[in-house]
Length: 150
Image (tube, rainbow, N blue to C red; front, side):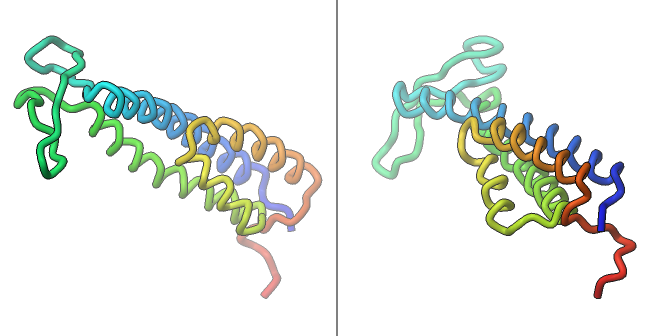
């Protein structure tokens, strides 16, 4: 049975927003980790060296970072945390779209991978948005809450 068009369009809109935010944060994580691994630097906000600054650190015998400021916010860690929360939102929108469109579980996993593989979310969002719109127009394989199937 065909889902209500407004349910699919809402799910697609939420998925698009979640995909863009998650993808952008994932690009930021990639850049910040490149700085962390190549130059032993963290991005800091409101630290002792200015509003935004790259702070050098070294690792002790246990692998802990030492030499970072005691004041300010470590934006590298903050971006990781924010990405994690938005990835949960991304998974919800993935699940919502997947369940409305009655796609295979493999397709759900491919879309979910978009939130952890840099740049993939932009491609999956573009592709599956087109697929969902075409499928909704054709009325193929989707379900609604008033389905009479048991």
